[in-house]
Amino acid sequence: MKKVLFVNGCIRGGQSRTLRLAQRLVSRIPDAEIEVLLLPALHLTPYDAKDIAERDALSAAGAFGAPFFALANQFKTADAVVLACPFWDMSVPSMVRNYLERLCVTGLTFHYGSDNYPVGDCRLTRFVYVTTRGGIVDNRDPVLADHASAYLLSLCKLLSAGRFDTLAAEGLDIVGNDAEALLRAAENQAEEMAQHFWD
Figure 1 (cartoon, rainbow, N blue to C red):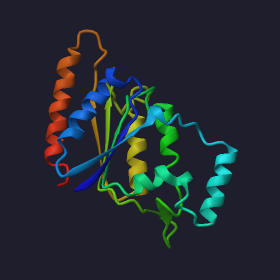
Figure 2 (tube, helix red, strand yellow; figure 1 turned 180 degrees about the horizontal axis):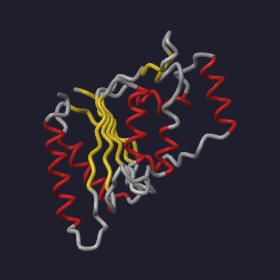
Figure 3 (tube, helix red, strand yellow; figure 1 turned 45 degrees about the vertical axis):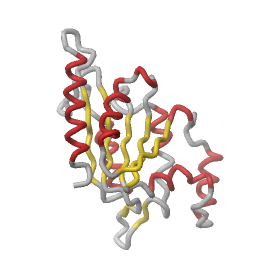
Figure 4 (cartoon, one colour; figure 1 turned 120 degrees about the horizontal axis):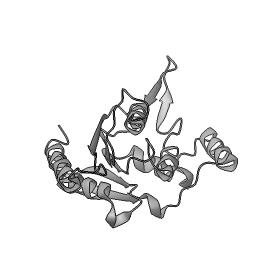
């Protein structure tokens, strides 16, 4: 079986529409062992000067098995990652950003090749960002742009050769929209995605 890391960054827990959508996808992925990482329980804070010094010292020593790099090692060994979090102020919630910065470790999750271009060292073949949005995104307009998907695509390509996809239900908070119908339509997309997840 293949290892799927389900990174749950849903702040509202059981009330989260994003979690509902993500669970539909994750529960339907075939041939998968699901490992759940519950971000709200980790209480991650942004790196400070002490954290950066520790990271750099461990990296210089090649001590990549240290507990400091546990999240990066967990990510590195996943065959696929499903990251679920709400579309938050045009990007991702801060706790998700705090998690993501722990994944970018030179010499562990990526390295620089002979041409000075970064090469991903993670084995994942799929990275799926699952989200729900109250409004509608439009990348032609900077006020409505989806900066989260663009950022996560770049991160995926930095760390791996995996395929990146966004699965989203949007327009859920627009007056007059049927939020439940929109969410059900996205759940149908999740089921279709799961059927061909490893293709």
